[in-house]
Image (cartoon, rainbow, N blue to C red; front, side):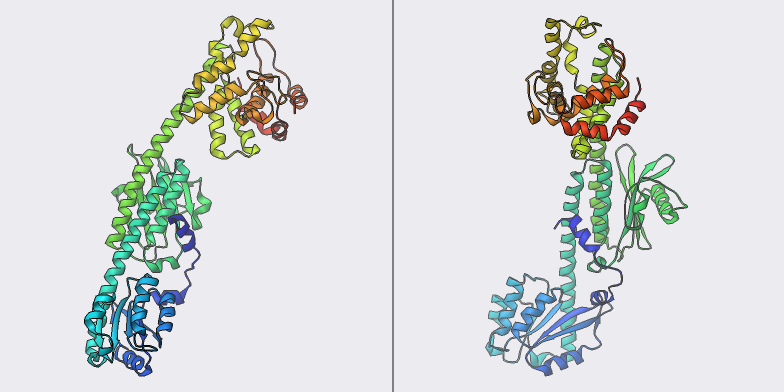
Length: 516
């Protein structure tokens, strides 16, 4: 189970589970003996016993079979006082083997108690079975029984503490791996917030409480909430003010002043900073237990990893932004050379994304299409100016040269290992193909034309018709719509034209916002 899945499971529990919380405040002692008197005497001798301010909780079973069922129901048992001879001469030994090998429980301290030491010689039992102590019932006085409890519970406490630290470290490693895979800043921040919520509930009792939290970007004039859980979810996308959440803002300011993480009053405030001073700040409330030194150490390890991941996300975003700017610049250069405005490629990009999302393309791929579509006519760089900017109709030879721009653009971009440029190569090649055939360069039909090309073709023609060119005036909207309808199922895929017409207001708003 991943850390995120574990977090979801944890949230199923509520604060008010008093019975479960009560169990967490006791040490479970399992009495396994077929003599009821032994149970009564043991309970009486240890009735006032406490260890670390936690009393004992006794679980009585009277046979080896019952013991196997009980340890499966209570894997958090601290000590098992186990009789050797019950329904059989070796029933207790069978239970010990079951606990270690079948139940895979290495934490519970097993103390064999026997009234017939000859039935299970001590040396052989200690050698062959993973038990922790061997006592004859006659030697277990109240004082010795108390001493045994102290020694065994200390051992159980230390073993479970080590196991808890191991689980915490595994959670840190898994959480770190998860956030390193997140490239979107919003997804990254949400992931860190959820992983921190999970890691902060390292105590077994912590699953019984709910954690509310938020993460905000540190801006010059305040804090912008970018992710949230619990009661803060409605604040995502808003500026965080002292009026809305005074305790959160105070904690943020204290953490920013000291440059340190803060734990107080069941709340945790942590900094996730990048190399250039940018960063996010986290706030989580509802922490069930005080953080131990080990908990703090694990959180610091995770936060260091989160900071590295944060820098990677920043760097990735900067690289992608640079790629997008280069792509726009290339597209605008082509449009400028052909005496057209660079805003055409911006409009085609936004319209293409709108159509792609409504078509069913996932958000990430639609974003790739958006930033690749400005390259649809990149091959025009290789077309002579006399043909590219000819005000009249092209003759047959000139038209063949003009059509070559589709493959020129494809050949320019096809060898790139960058997703945007690879998508640009496909769009350059396929956006002049026609749904029923007759297009160029390969006379493809239907779904043989790549979806990128089919979508960009609709966006490109719609905007081109409504824009002024060296060879024509801008068409009025109703005439453009009539042509799109007439070419539905001929030049264009019918479904994409339907999406365009169903979103005509949004498309015209895109065009209006990016006027020439």
